[in-house]
Length: 184
Image (cartoon, rainbow, N blue to C red):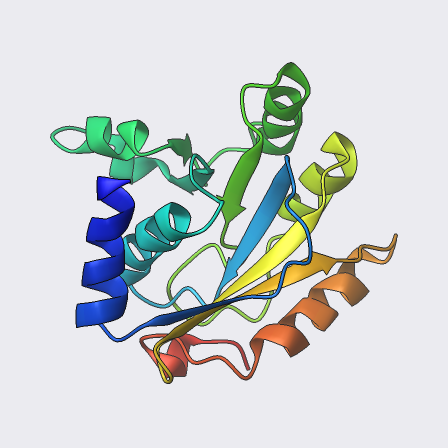
């Protein structure tokens, strides 16, 4: 309770941010697709959002270089799982298995895979959702209006590229900390 009050004070009272949560019912398991991801500050915003919403306890995927000493332990303690982007190591299958075993129930993924503009999103989050039979919700970081917008369940189809384009359309109005690196 004190942690939530602390984050509310920092993020909302001092920072002036608002959270618009459009979900219509609680979800026990889900993937949260976070975009636009344009700054290291997104990590701290994400931590506050996780605490201030029912996403508390959500894990996240991040590049493996963040998990090296001296701060790697902190990223792990905060729910991080390293992704080695230089290897094809079946991360999708590993995350599906973690959902199936109940090791994780919620995970945040940035489909851009980098803070710089990326026209082609990674599709692993879609394959994880399908394989683990979990819904996807979208979470936009809108620095332009100092607000976080969380969608209701995003309906997936078998058309992965079409779904990704519809997600980009949903995210496009929201401006990241560095808008030039955001979704176009």
